[in-house]
Image 1 (spheres, rainbow, N blue to C red):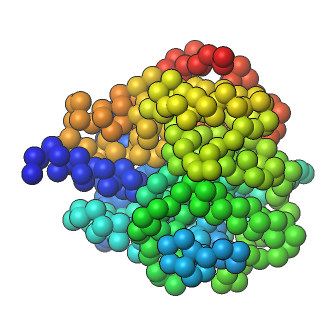
Image 2 (image 1 turned 30 degrees about the horizontal axis):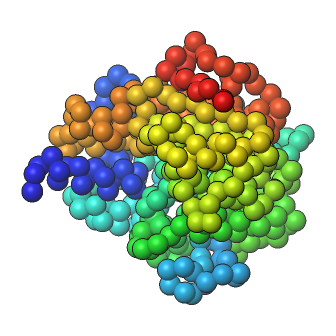
Length: 396
């Protein structure tokens, strides 16, 4: 096999799952692996960039069961894993931080891509089960749908940034269309032969209904695990937004097509291809595009033409398909490991600097939800000198 093609195959698997490995850092690149201290033992561990908001971040898992439809892969009951991320209150530091992915799932992922590396999963900023920060007002809510053959952790940088600024964010694993680990230790891999954006949208509707339960004082977790203290009282279900990457961008539009609880939608470089097709919307929708903008993808152009509410398309110069999620920070490390560089690396992550990509991921999704769920902010009024690589495409 051509060694370049072999490296591409490895990198493709890693991109799809968000895998990261420890490598030396360089300016603008992902942080180096943290080598265990003497006596600490264990493998090296990489780090993610932390959030910038005033709140500490809490997180908790939910095991959800959809009783309304059979699983499209197995025909049995449809089970889903989700995570809730939120601003954490006092005492958060006494709670351990969550890994990017549970350890068993992480090691299955490593085996799946055939990479023999003793690497611990990166840690997030989320404190497991910490109480929710108290506030005078309830918190706006944002849901997330991941891309094909991926996992709900793929935009942790964006998710924990929103939580640190006062949002409650719910991320959903699409079982059998990604890597997921259940409380009993089962790990499922992306084995579904035909998993559509409509299937992803149906999963998100289950999470939406679970939020209704939580706000009403009920616990939707299938295993009855306790919810973080104060979570139900923190939810403002009158202010719900949603975003997704790739296939998840399409499922965001589909959820908004069928459920008016979602007031604003954001798509990260999604193709907007679905059967039945995506329809128009009268609510705000923003596109952050790279390879699948309306100038290159007819389905995106058609979707854009049907939008009747506030709309915006922005694009970062040098961005690739995965530039708005964690892979833009992680893949350059993989590239060093497998000896991929130059034009071959640019095929995967473009030429957008990872550090700049993180700044964009922190700023623009937050600006969108701040504008449409909180009624504040000016970053989306037009191009900013602070983000010279971000272009505002014509609205016409």
